[in-house]
Length: 118
Image (cartoon, rainbow, N blue to C red; front, top):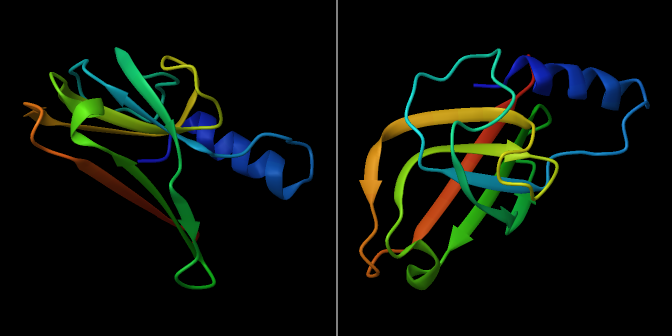
């Protein structure tokens, strides 16, 4: 879900007043329900610049992030977010909470987050 902070940033971008835009995925190990009022991950553990940004239709953007098995080894992923910076507990434009996914050093991770403006 896009957070209130993310909605504010989009409005600033459209108005030409913002210089930062989404460029990073943040991974976290904190658990809790996602809410639009959140501005950070509960417990950030990693940040990675997008592998790619694509525009599948006129009103959509898809961000993709990739992590190899070494980067993910030992992580129990419970949340991820989209951010304009690499600070693992920085302001997030969107946040997703999920049941714990444990990485044992044999799994890679790819996240794709698609936003649609309507």
